[in-house]
Image (cartoon, rainbow, N blue to C red; front, side, top):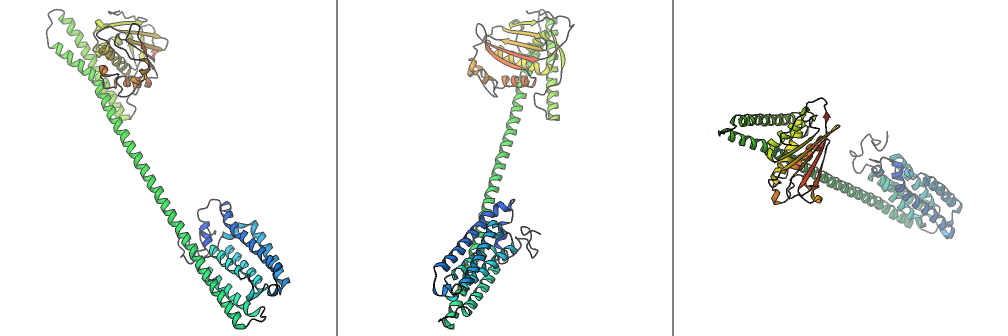
Length: 467
């Protein structure tokens, strides 16, 4: 069982009391690659240990008097300490890999440090400072209680060394006083070192919690911002849908109103034919409105795009354009229609294409200064091209792309809701077609629409009453 999950007592690191949890355990929690993460931490203590051993060797080389009473034994301990330091240098992660490796390392450090102190002057040895470094290193590895235990054991060991080894001319009282003094400060060092490590851990934990709270707050803010953006997009889509519906129903409803008013009056000449024609137009408008309502029902049921395709039927191109002109309110005497070939029939999405042609003819009629509106329809292969030409003021070609933007307007003279050409562009994209704006010869605007269709052979030709 690994120490990064459960301690030797069977408790998780988070559940262990602060005075029992080993300090090295905090390096093991949540590290995906322990070897790489622990190496820099362990190297600090390893290199300090190397420096301590080298300083002890220097002390033996330059020292005199009580420092060299046990030269052979002192050099033996220093050599063992050097070999031990080199081994740990090759495995720096041993310093913080868990409770038992940390305990073994601390025990070896304490034993070798005590040996160096004992054979380099005992109570008079300058190497007593090494014992404090051992306690500081232990505080970084072990729990608070374990560090205090090491401090007590190391202090007791030093008192014993001070009383037994190298008595010389120093009295027992002075040696005991010296041993107890340094033992007490070893205990203080252990308590202070462990306390500082605990404070550092608490500070890191608090900083981690603060960072986690900051990240959580940022995530919540991002989610709220994203939710607001989605709600705004949904609201904009709903508003756009309503505008599209109003725009598309405006033309047939207006035309129906005009036709009903005409039918309520009597004509003195040609009344029967006029009424018959108007009734046919009324029927066409009603069918168109019914088709639009069915399309809206399809969208609501299947959540498809508002300009969904798929309802194909065969149309006579000539009659199809005439019906679109009537729906747009364009008088036939203003219409100049050329269809090539004259008997052109095609299979297409009649409802969507009619909305395209009706919108374009309505714009041409409104902005054409009561001049004739030209329509050139050409069926070639699997492509139907429609060119609508008006004699209005036209627009600069560098602004032509702007016309198909949502709610775009071409100045006050063209004071529309800004949806007609956007609807045309969206439908043409849904039908995989293209739209192009050009300056008309002699002034005005020419709009060319190209749509993929299915051609049908053998259809009878249709003669235009208004070529």
